[in-house]
Length: 123
Image 1 (cartoon, rainbow, N blue to C red):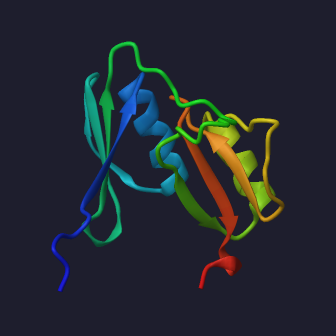
Image 2 (cartoon, rainbow, N blue to C red; image 1 turned 135 degrees about the vertical axis):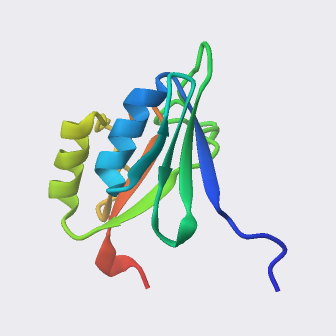
């Protein structure tokens, strides 16, 4: 039996409203709460994504030889190039440094790296 269940992941943010709009567009999740200091999206199975304003937020570097990005989200998509273009149109950045062929690393508007990968690669 599990000790706990993951119900929400919260990301530090330099602009909670902007990041909520971005992640809502990317994930198709509803914005359940929105204010300058904090936003929350709700997704399937009761999982939520929080976005908390942090003064003087510093984005993790990408690429980062020290591996100090801390964590990143892996998102399954059907069409890698189309999904990357849609994320960029929503406010993401596609860095030049791309370490693989079957996924794309992007940066959300606050600079957090996340990966898009082809859904067929997920078991």
